[in-house]
Image 1 (tube, one colour):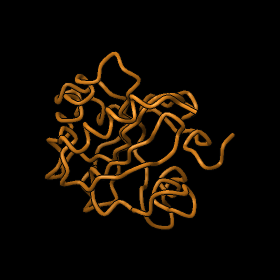
Image 2 (cartoon, helix red, strand yellow):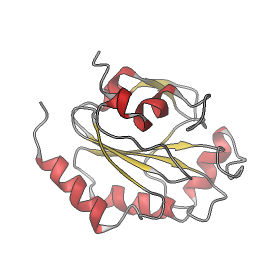
Image 3 (spheres, rainbow, N blue to C red):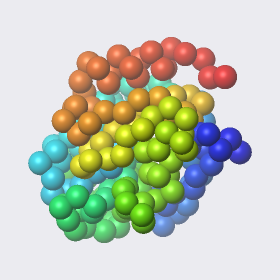
Image 4 (cartoon, helix red, strand yellow):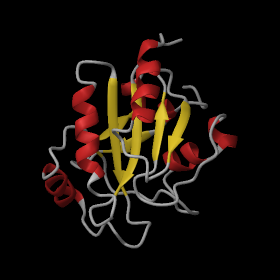
Amino acid sequence: MDNNSIYQFTVEKLNGDHIGLADYSNKVLLIVNTASQCGFTPQLQDLSDLKKEFAGQDFEILAFPSNDFGGQEPLDGDAIGAFCSNYGNNFTIFEKIRVRGPYADPLYKFLADKKENGNINSKPRWNFHKYLIDRNGNVVDFFYPFTKPTSSKIKKRIQRLLAAEPK
């Protein structure tokens, strides 16, 4: 397994099933830490809209709820899924994890640290921090919470990555 890509990690879905991120190989991914009680929570609808816009293409959104910022994700498990369904959720939501600090999930340690991922040095500063992953599992860009998922900046970057062939 490539230690410089996200494909080395296994994560837990809300239903308790574990999935290797290698299952997403050859897809462009937007990985987002979410929270149900945040001022940016309406971005859940934007994420659903973005997923619809790229439907039928090799694009996926992976949401990782986190309670790391202001205790803004008090929900767990099925309650998170039920809440997100209010926003037309059409993307995969994983089990709540830590995304920063010494107890951060290994995936998020990797995403945030250039020494680990080789490209990006950006720890989440709040909920709805977004990481863009290319078809080879490489972290290629990040977007701060105030950048809406439906922004032209994110859409154009996704389009370019979708047009590129995997190596």
